[in-house]
Amino acid sequence: MTLNKKLWIGIGVLVILSPLGVILPDQFKAGTAWGEWGLDEIQMMTGYVPQGFSRLSELWKAPLPDYAFQGWKGKDLFSMSFAYIISALAGIATITGVVLLIGKVLVKEHE
Image (tube, rainbow, N blue to C red):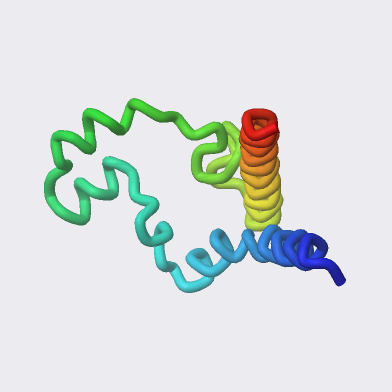
């Protein structure tokens, strides 16, 4: 088996496991994942929001906020798991496309 094939199999396994990010916190009543807090959650946990954080929070809007589609917040666990998988595939496609594009540009520069 080639290294390339092993890589894609590993990525596929990670995509299939990605719904664990929504299933496990739900099962253990853990709230949100560590480090994925919004301004309101930071305010609640620490009692304040750093000025720079609140200023820069509007700089970037995620294409799939909370790894789900618009209006899907509060849907059942199956729907949210599906959204996690779609989000993982979109991220992989974006990163793969950018890496391939950069690779083509670098190869052309060195020919």
